[in-house]
Length: 261
Image (cartoon, rainbow, N blue to C red; front, side):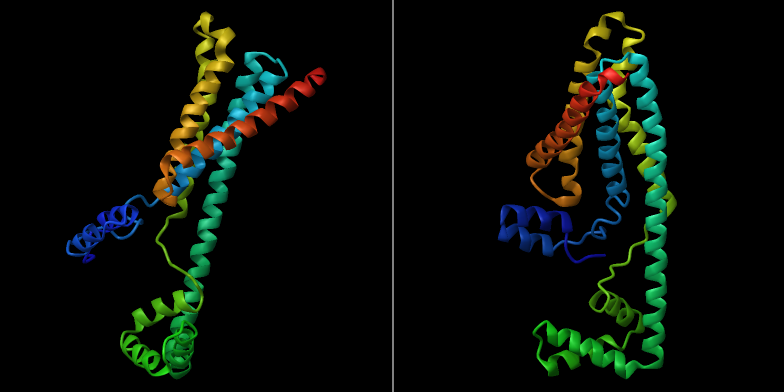
């Protein structure tokens, strides 16, 4: 349990509220930074952003080439499944590789601490001295740290290797990425699917897809501040612009190459 409420501390920092910061430090929180607050939020947000942008680029390209709604749906759903699986597999493999690398490095650090503790102590002293800490103070700190082997290894992982360990599940990351990609990637296709059943929508399917995609892009960009902690409006506007540029490029290319269809 932390000796402060981390959410209130973050809020106080944004507002530069010193009294609020002091109050936050006097409260206790069960939160463990961002891991328990939303362990897979990164996969959900970035999977969703990639899904909606790539699928809308397909829709825009087909619209630029003046092809039928059937082509939009075929290419759109093919992109939705193929790219979604590709991203999920990539997320799984990268998370798995990172976890395996961290595990091996931790085992090596633990082995070095066990078999050559004096050398590891000196190494940590030097690391602290490089940060500007006095040699005697650094030695005192290391002597205290080295009394607990697990803590010692934890600190060596961060200070020496720059590794902050996590407990992310490769499978859960992959599942979150795929379903987020598929869910948000379906948004640009929704208007064309509905137009199959609602005849009046057919002439306006692409415009409707643009509006739905724009709103969703802005919303996802705003939600991204859960990771970046930036201004939500600027983040949303930025993501809207990025998606718009990608769609415009796809539309222009589709229009220029329409004679090949």
